[in-house]
Image (cartoon, rainbow, N blue to C red; front, top):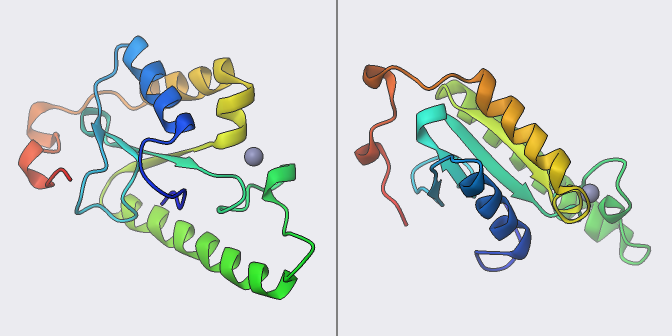
Amino acid sequence: MSLIVGKDTRPELAVRSLLHKMGFRFRLHLKGLPGRADIVLPKYKTAIFVNGCFWHRHSACKDGRIPKSRVQFWERKLAANVRRDCETLKQLERLGLRALTLWECEIEKNLPAVRRKLHKQLRVTRPQKASEKIRDNTYTQV
Ligand SMILES: [Zn+2]
């Protein structure tokens, strides 16, 4: 879902290292899932998206504003991204996965809040019984 060019962006690395410190194990960029989540925790049936505020139009965030030039172009382009994000979340839900969106700005400015968010989401989603777990071979890793 992230449209930041290239993988392993700085905010993404920060989230990975945070998850690691919190003791969660995860997979990266699993193919075959809608939206190609940045980080997937199969045991918790959770997909994490690390979203750039501009590209995904973070509402109530100064980085989520439309630029002052080429307004129409950007409005159309970014609206398409938001629509796609929305569709992705619905598709994941249909597959029984929960999606957690983390924003670039919160990762950069307030990592403790991100930690709380992760903790909250992953604690309420209890690990699945073995039979319900997403098997590793369900998806192919990139
Ligand atoms: Zn933001």
